[in-house]
Length: 125
Image (cartoon, rainbow, N blue to C red; front, side):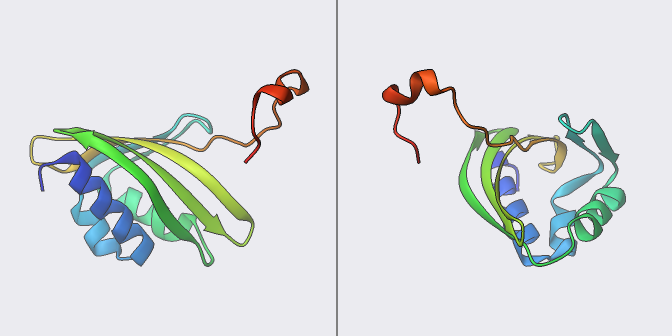
C-alpha cells in the first residue's frame, strides 16, 4: 500500500478490529507516535503496538468520520467511543518510501462551551 489515504483507512480498520498483527504491518519499524497535548511520544513498532493493545482497556470503538490525503500524507477525523462517552480525534500521518506509516501526530481536543456573546450567531449541535 503506497497511498496514505488507503493506509490510514486500513490502520483504523485494524485498530477497530483489534487486529494488532495487521495494525503492526501498516507501521514502519521505527514509527514515531506523538501526542502533543499530553507531551507523550512512543518510538518503534513493538512499543506502539503495545501502547495501543494495552493502553486502552475496556470495550471501545472507533468510527472514521473522514480521511483525506494523497501521496505520503493523510489526516483523519475519528470518533472514539467507550464507557465514559465519545471523543473526537484528529490524527496526521506521514508514510515512508515503502508506504508504511512512520510518523503519527494525534490530537484529542476537549469540548468546551462557547462564549455567550456569540450564541445568537450559531446553532448548537
